[in-house]
Image (cartoon, rainbow, N blue to C red; front, side, top):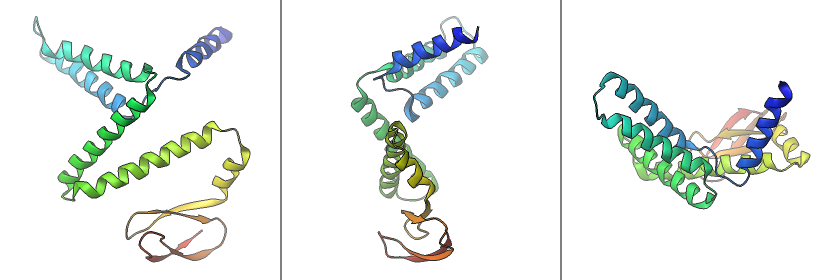
Length: 167
């Protein structure tokens, strides 16, 4: 029985090779589908709008996950993250323009982490264990420093702010 499930898992992995997969936008559309499903159960009518919205959001989400046009899906997700940051920035009372840069930085960080994990080079895995990453308290820039050096003074490469951390 275990071999059967391993075969199904391997077949699904082969199917997903070259496809986009799940990202923040597809997860958001899935959450919207679940919310519409709950609203459909609450407001049950013969022709419920919520019923059709569940199907629309599910189809959009699955279309994005199984798409082979990864660059277009990546661009859509980046635009979604920028819009989300702009809206959250307005709710927080900060400017939305400064948040778009942090979204881009965090998206690059996750993309680099994915690319490094997909490579089977052991030296890249070792380098992650040899460094610590801190955020500059002034500009929120990530700064990578070597581990095991004790208390060190770190200078931010972006704003030249100096701060002390234990590595």
